[in-house]
Image (cartoon, rainbow, N blue to C red; front, side, top):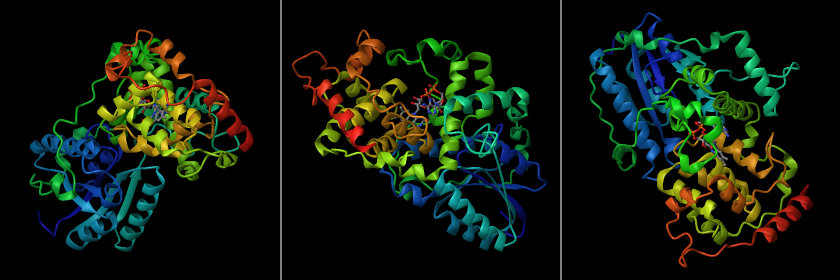
Length: 435
Ligand SMILES: Cc1cc2nc3c(=O)[nH]c(=O)nc-3n(C[C@H](O)[C@H](O)[C@H](O)COP(=O)(O)OP(=O)(O)OC[C@H]3O[C@@H](n4cnc5c(N)ncnc54)[C@H](O)[C@@H]3O)c2cc1C
């Protein structure tokens, strides 16, 4: 690499793909060679355990991209540290014209990007960012008054209406046709996972393959955990190995119920964008006065899948073992922790955040607040899931339960840690007295 060359940078973040990548398309077609980078951000990684599978997933996904970049004699350069310091290092070494990246809407990422933009501006370097991980971002879907929607149904109607009026937002950015415009660099990966404090776990990354029959039947089968009949697109959406535009186009052809879920994703993203306060507070302020019991033993029993409620236990054990939990079971386990055990929803939110491979701040926070009744468009607090009837309804033959709780129906299985009608009454009283 020649230090005297001037080039642009493409900064990969939540968009780990070469195809249909909007900022990458703009970078590769701007008339200058493009130097691709990825920064393992110390501020984020320092909070994770050494055996975090998501870091392995990202690392392996980048190795896969570098394999695809080989014929183009390029490779993503890996850095580890504080993004601001990394950019200072890069700018002190090379002549950079513009940095390209896709928008990120989480509070930390917004602050980070503002800092980077300021630094680049001071050095006379451009910072061009684009919409990519979402179909409608920021204030593209609002009420007539310009205020953000806080209720899903009208948001959903407006979202669909806007798409029907003009589907140019699903336009494909054929970045994959311009890969020869990457700067030629050797694929000499000097950074290993152990250098950044993580242990190597093999074969975590798998490419996403949409299963069309599953999508076509999604509306009828999605609620039954034993059927494994959801798309498993979550982690790929989180790190951008799939294009959401292509998934929405697929959903339009296959299943409206599945499309609805992709719109829920966007709904919670715009909630976090407009109300960043939700990251650490209930959306509805008066819910902060609930008198939680926060019993640590109860929390531990829940997290280990030892509550004596088989559907709850199966879900938590699935999560602990695989990093995934079925959506119906996520709702039941979350409700159980909050309402049956009266443990602050933020404890559960943090536990899911540490375990879920598809963890996404906006979706996780939005759904925990939904389950707690504290959220913008939440279930009313007095609607309390009965974990036993939920199991009868959605895992009638106990197939899912037996898979994760092999001692179910034997003397070895633990007794319920709390009695359902007692817990229900206690919860209603706690909520009532706070509101
Ligand atoms: C307490 C709780 C916590 C959750 N935490 C997360 C999380 O951290 N990350 C996450 O992506 N989803 C989260 N969800 C939503 C949902 O459970 C998962 O998106 C889904 O189970 C992932 O499986 P899938 O990829 O097969 O999804 P599918 O059912 O096939 O849905 C397709 C995609 O739509 C989006 N989606 C589906 N349901 C929701 C929803 N309720 N809210 C927002 N987006 C949705 C996801 O991106 C998902 O991958 C949570 C739900 C609950 C109840």
